[in-house]
Image (cartoon, rainbow, N blue to C red):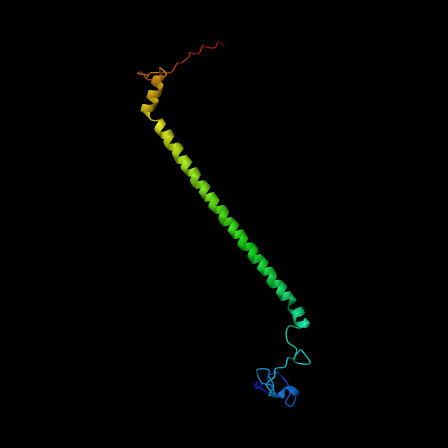
Length: 139
């Protein structure tokens, strides 16, 4: 088992140029040196770094687009649900009103009053069935 110390944390043999480099990546003089640039004093983004991270950036952009699309879809569905809810409430109110008008208009007293204006009277005798006699068939 190898023990990590500031001298061997970067897997460099002792006596190498980076031997004085600690965990922070600074040499003993205190200046930072990047491993991917030979001169060590370049600042900002390098072309290789940007090119290597391009797939990840495009992936994040795709996830962002899907997230925004999903938010718009959910908002549209909520609006549609609210309009349908209002329409159902309106239709329920219309149904209740028409049902109350129908039940109020079909009471016996109202039907009798409407029939009286037409000259119709209530039957005193129950209805009877008219039966036609069948003739016997000769064989």
